[in-house]
Image (cartoon, rainbow, N blue to C red):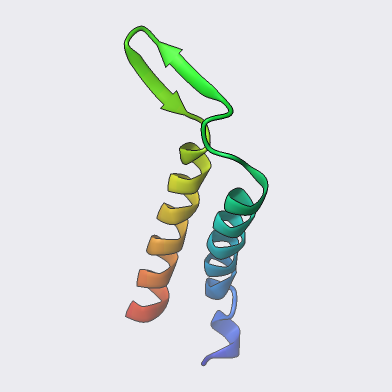
Length: 64
C-alpha cells in the first residue's frame, strides 16, 4: 500500500461507518414521506447514499 494514497481509504471508512451508524441508530418505518401515492421511507435514503459512496470508493481502491 502506498502511504501517499492513504486518503483513498477515507471514503471506504466513511461508507462503512455511515452504513453502520444508520443501521444502529435509525429505525425503518419511523419517518415516511408521502407525496401523492408515492411513499418513501427516510431510513433508506442515507443507507443508499452511503452504499453508493462505499461501492465507488472500493472500486477506485481496487482498480488503482
